[in-house]
Length: 246
Image 1: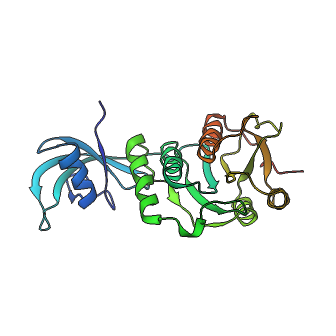
Image 2: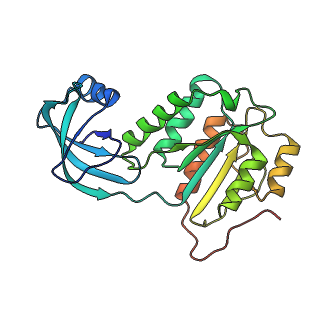
Image 3: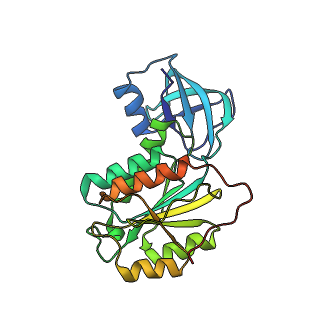
């Protein structure tokens, strides 16, 4: 069994000591029932991780202290994926965040959509960020998925294209997924009922490429995870250009 991972603001040099924050301490001591000498991994969510061990000591605030050992850099998963998702209701949004975080996407951006059933501007960001952090710990990713600011579909596509990404729009049509991908991609998944025709047209005009995720009508979180998985499974195109609509 692999060692449990715990988040710290920054990974100090080997031989240093660092205290776990309240949430991480609760997980280590209460949930995992770890004690002095138990081996763990600490990571900063930005690609740095280190082997460590609980010392049995506490800092002035009562937080458990770990001694840091050998450090390492964790490469970011490829292709580098950004997910634009119109948030679904309740726990389904939490499920989408958890699974996308485990799949190693760089960021999840809440999309404002005309058919949206959840106000993308009003999501509980603190809870969403905690879910993404727990997903990184679960998957031993080394990188925490970021939570972007909400925006409309066309604005999201335009920003991703300006960032040098190929952008794919989830669709029930017959457009196939490219056999190989550039290193930087993004995708957008609409709400229940999908994006409107005007929203889709504006996204395509901004540079999005519609791709099929099958003939079935999928829930938002299922479509997002299916598309993220498909993109992560594709090989990178050596020297290929970024595909655009039209």
